[in-house]
Structures are given as C-alpha cells and as structure tokens.
Amino acid sequence: MLGSRLGFATNTPFVVALSGGGDSVALLNALNEAGWRARAVHVDHRLHPDSGRWADACAALCSKLGVSCQIEQVRVTEIPERGYEAAAREARYARLREVLGAGEVLLTAHHQDDQAETVLLQMLRGAGVAGMSAMPAVAPFGPGRLARPLLSFRRAALRAYLAAKGLAWIEDESNQDLARSRNIVRHRVLPRMTEHWPGTIATLARSARHAAQAQTLLDELAAQDVAAVHCGRGGLAMSQLVRLSVARQANLIRFWLRRRGLALPSEAQLGEILRIVADRPRSGLAVVQWPGATVRRYRDSLVASDACVAPVEWDPQEWDLSAPLVIVAAGVRLRSKPATGTGLSLARLAGRPVSVRPRVGGEMCRLAGNRYRRSLKKLLQESAVPPWERARLPLLYIGDDLAAVGDRWVCEPYAALASEPSVRLLVEDVTGEFGDSPP
Image (tube, rainbow, N blue to C red; front, side, top):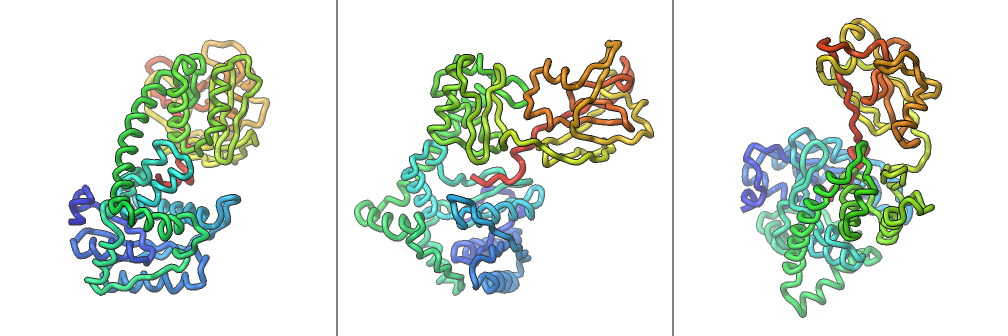
C-alpha cells in the first residue's frame, strides 16, 4: 500500500530521515518490507542528554534491517525570538540537504495528524493560502526532492503497525511539553475538537489540499506577472508593476521573494513595499527590511537581497572556465559557454592565467568600438546597476588585465572578432540556493 503512495519508480534511491521515533521507524520498516531501495540518515542535534543513545538505537535498527545508516551530528545555535526548536529544525534540514545525493528523494514520516496540526497552527498565526497549504507531499529539496508518503495515514494506524510488527521506538519527552504550541494543539486542542467533530483531522488535511491547489493557481498567475514586469537582474519594473491590482502586486511580490529563497515579509512589511510601488517616485521610503531579506527601490526598479547594505567581501579565485565557478559570498555562479564572434576571444585566452576578482575601485575598461578607456564606476552608474549589487559583480582578469565585467562587457583587446571562436560568460544569481528550508 505504501508503494502506491510514493508515486516514484521502483529504482528511485530513497533516504529516510530517521529520528528513531515511532513514525520514522514505521516508515523505514515498511519501505524495507516492500523491497524499496533506501538508506537512513539520523541527525543528532546534541541537545538532549540521551541523544547519543538515540543515535545508537537508530544504528541498531538499521543493522537489523540490513539498511545503511548514516549518523550526522550538528551544532545548534539558538535563533533569537524563535528558540532552539526552530534552530534545530534548520540545522537538521541543512545537514540533510548536504548528505542528499543528486536524484535521491528524502522521505520524512509526517502523517495526517501532523498535517492537521500544521494547518491549525498556521490558521492561528493568521497565515494565508500558502501557509494553509501546510506540508506538500512532494517538493524540490537540495539536489533531489523531499517526499512525505504518510500524509494520508493517521498516527493511530502507524502505532498499530508498530505493535503488529513488534517494533520498538524512542519516545522524546519533549513531545509532551505543553510550553510548545504544537504540543498544546496535539494534546489539548485537537482531542477536544475531535470529540465534537470526529472527522476533524481528515477535514483539516483536506483543507490543506484545497489550499495547495489554490496556491498553485496563484503561483501560475504570479509567474506570468513576473515575466511581464521583470526588468533584468532579478528586479521588477515598478512602472509595470503599478498597472496590476494591489492583490496581484502582493501575490507577485511574495512569489518573487519566495522564488529567490528569501524570507517572506509580514503583512505590515508587505504593505510598506506596496506603498513604495504606489507612491513612486514621490515616496521617500526606499527600503523595507526584515530578518532574512531587504527590498529596495532603485530608480524604476524594485530589487531584493538577503542582506543589508553591508559590503560583500570575497577573495580572488583562479578559474579555468571548464566548470562553473560558485562565489558563495557574492551569491553568484559564473559559467562559460562556447560561442562565435561574441564574448571573449579564445585565441587571446590561450595559455594565459585567468582569475575572477571583486571590485576594489579604480578599474578601467575600453569597450569594443571605443578609442578610450572608461572607468568601471561610470559604466555601472550609466547602466543603473544598484550600488549594493556592484560588489557582487565578478570581474574576469587575464593575467593582470581586466578582460570582462561579469556578463555585461568585454574589455579590449580581449573581445572576439566576427566569426572568431570565442566564449561567452554567464552570471547567475544563486542567493536562494544556500541554507533554504523545505516547505
């Protein structure tokens, strides 16, 4: 029965997030019984005095089942205003993302009761449609995907399965701590609701599916709107954005930020962004900032980043152009693409050391067809490159000569002639690829 819930090919490589609790033990055993190929990963947060014993129990279970078990330890630093629970979750998923291989599918043991709890908690937080969608059954995750095959199973059914199989599991006493909101919902709120409405759990889970369908439609609309108002380099043209209804503007902005891997604004913060758009160019409000994201107005563009205006610092790196170069501090990926008559001349690259460096100031570049060199600062100003983006711009040097400014300009004498074999540079924004949490 579980196999039909997975919806993946039988040769799909699975990785089970094994906590040692009843739900993940049931999932791993069911997969093993059904003959699905899987390995297990246990993340030890080292926050509980028995965490080492829990890791040993997971290793013993995997040994009994003949399943590979990987134990990973993480260091958890408390997140202000969110506490250790949120910090542990982020550290856990960050490590799971690191150990997940290309094409692998991470399986978590969230079930229908968990989904109902999440929906109710999101409602109490005033969440919108995206929050009400709760946990998706399948979502992109790192180099692979994350799947939750037990969302249609009740907690009681999983406990009955464990008892029938004679399987032992770990009980974490923190799951009884009523200082945690989820535990209040689990042990106090939902039991009272199900006394009066026996179908509460299934009904809330169904609401999540309806909300997910509605969110899909909103995302499809937002993707169309982003394409219409996109002004390059990830920005939005406010002169086009203002033509949309306020509701579509809000939907677009949330989608745009989420797609860039940035934290979403509160209702009040989103209202401030919308006022920037509505009051352009009169508005003196040019920046809206919250933990994890900053949105700014620059000329006619609305631009977003994951940091304040603090300068970006990164070290020069050598590059042979054969493989993509990721500069994590700048949040960019540099690629090369074979071309003819455009970009960098291969003849002038041959045998020369190539490096990628940040701006330090004072750089000069003579563009093709120009007699004189011009300051890079002036070129960037004329091209309306926002000041906070300039430090992220990778400069390609051949020896000590500035040969290319990202994928914007090639400096003489390194520009390819017509019909000459060449290579084009591509600069991609990858700020959303580091440290994101799963839906």
